[in-house]
Image (cartoon, rainbow, N blue to C red; front, side):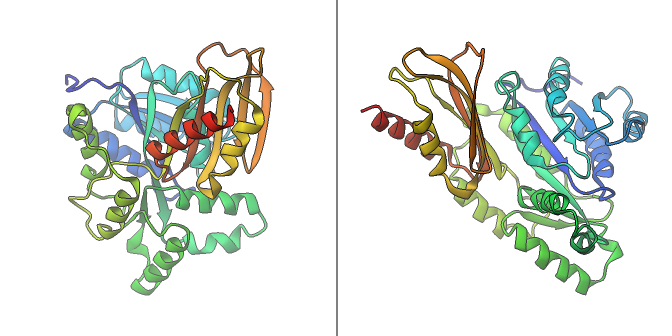
Length: 342
């Protein structure tokens, strides 16, 4: 099938969720139905073990699919440095969309961070984070993994940063259990669409439809108010069809840091600390001081790290956070840096 449109930045859809929740089942169906939307997908899969189990299943179900695999480790930590090369290989095959299936213990934030590396930033853009929840077991996770705080934190972040939550295996719980689960999930994510599913089945027009509309007529794509979009999503949560997802809650905003005046570490750090809890992390390349030396800045967990870098391109800052307003941030950034120059 011929590609129906050209893509400036290839959209990325991240599939998240704990082990056994139904991510691979969802991925297989997305691949089977992508052609009906005129989309040519590529896949990046990550498995914790050395053996490629799901990858073989994927290629048997969808022969000829473009796949890259990261085995024997989690791409949010030990395999993170390999993501860039894998995605670049996929981009060389000219896909319309890249689907990334994470391991069950991966934090989606780390993947978004990897997608903002200089080698990938101009070519890919996060579209949607889908988290699949196992309705039969999700309430037990806190007690089962109580001794592993990091894992409990990761499972909660999988829920918190999701744009779409699938409460899967709903056929294995009763109505009372379902109500309890939904109440618990809403403690961690009260805004995003929550759909009950069995076998990870739902109307894929919700995910693929906006890709068609956006890429077929990019000039007519409207500019949305992020807050209004989120409210609209909540109000439409009972509608499994007709609802479109045109944003991701976890977003990246790129700001130019190419200023004629001196830039200092303190000036940048003051801007970052004012962003509050909605800013998950930030990173960028800056030329500091009168000598214009290049530095890499990384901000995470309220801590900022600076180190010398050999980066020779134009300085920039990438913000990664929840429900960020790009226009407002750009105005505040340039105002802050202008005022700090006096």
